[in-house]
Length: 279
Image (cartoon, rainbow, N blue to C red; front, top):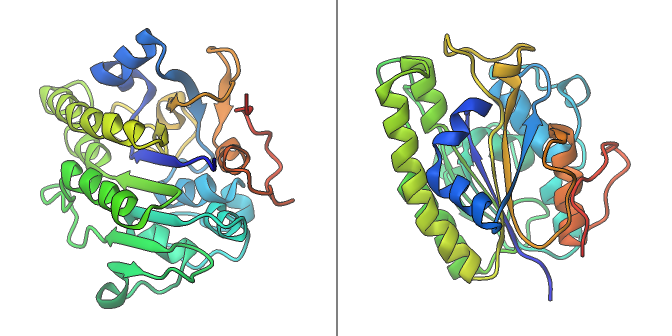
């Protein structure tokens, strides 16, 4: 039976904040999930990290140097390689992911929602732009709505691989920083909503990864080399074997790891070693 996998990317959550996710941490305690620390590429900027998550290479190789440099990436990625292997793909993310891995420039009229079963990249896409975002106006969709949308893709279209990305916590960190009630409360509610869907996805036969794209320092900044900006948690729900719990993972390892789990070929451009091994 072909494996099915969902990757949940919670934008901008530094390592120290993951202990506030009571449900995720509870599943680690029960043995249903495993947790490692992962370190982002440099720059630890959102768009650069999105591109690296799916290509398995550093920004110096794929060329996405920041949020103002978004284009269609011309190299292998998770979507393209899974499609070659016959898997059906889906994405519920910021529009940057559509531009990187499907087509650019992003046209909201045509690209906010599409179903393209013959596409060689993303078959079923649901995207948001965060247009109008600033320190006062978060312009982020409700996390519960995004989780429900991904679930719709799994149940309506039977996707084999799906990625979900939400900027809620990153935006709150930029606005309120991290040592505050606002951040504690937001993590508490996101963890509660996510937990309900993790249970549903697991019951539907999906393995699940929950992680971030980068961290954030106490001033609400990221982009540089500090561990606060680069380091975050990586949770895995599934039966593959992994390294010791104190192993520091490299973000460039994620793409080849996903392809190995899904039984797809790993392209030569992805040089980082996969860290999960099939039983």
